[in-house]
Image (spheres, rainbow, N blue to C red):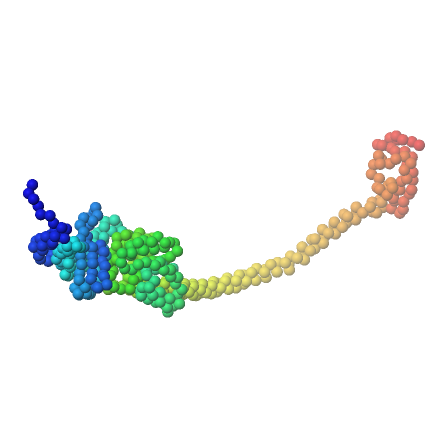
Length: 420
């Protein structure tokens, strides 16, 4: 075994450093994801760059940008993308390899290409949209009927966002005096906390208590709004059982949330105007309906009055004709009565006289005149021999008086049965 020189760690790292400088002399274009970013007191930027696959992190290296370079790089990136370089962002850097005998291997970044980051955002957005379309979610919330009177509104936004303040101010200052109920479910509107905060807000927002949900932010560049290109949030929007209005605040590119929301409005103020207009439209519809009903009622009254007038005319004519006809009948009956009544009265007078004559014949006094008598016992008219007891006091009534006697025998059928 050949004899090898004995090196200190420092001597070995110097050899490695020289070898790397000879092997990697040029700048390289490297794409990676930012795992962390820190700016020290001197203004130097320190990053951890990683590359991931479905199993996790498969490569990692430290990187830095010196303070003098970082100012220009950061300014250019923010101007192009609308947001600063941040954790979790995919970037394309131009860098040289550096090996320090104490701190080891790292990259020295010279520039960061903002167009690559924007392209990665666009690609990620397209993939999310394709996934949502495949799952049939892009039009699910859009298919919900918009409420006729959206007065109960849930808002998902940061309470300090200018867009939220504009929305509430415009809504409550409406010229019609509509009383809207606005409930804020506070969410993050940028950065990595957007997904978690929105999912929590949707879990707390009970659909039966609200008519619509409004998502507001208040403007920003494409990169600022990239947090709304989130599959989980877009899916929650699509599946929510009441209409979701996206009034995030942008002019050109739509976010994934815009694509799954029921209605997309450019600004929070425009979202408030839409809601006010819907309520106004309902009120106008009610007013128009009331006016049509009033006109219909007036027409019906006029038609009914016309029919009633014609009917009254017909009734007058019928009554006049009936009265005339009945007058003729009455006159005929009157003449008949005038001629028939005397004869009828005479006949009834004769019948009455005959009845009175018959009654007179039956008068007991007339019967007594003909020799008949009436006998009574104790004031009761005697009708049968069986009603008389021997010794009873009898009163016999004759035409011209009465006779008192005593019963000494009772004769039945002409036979004397009892004697004193």
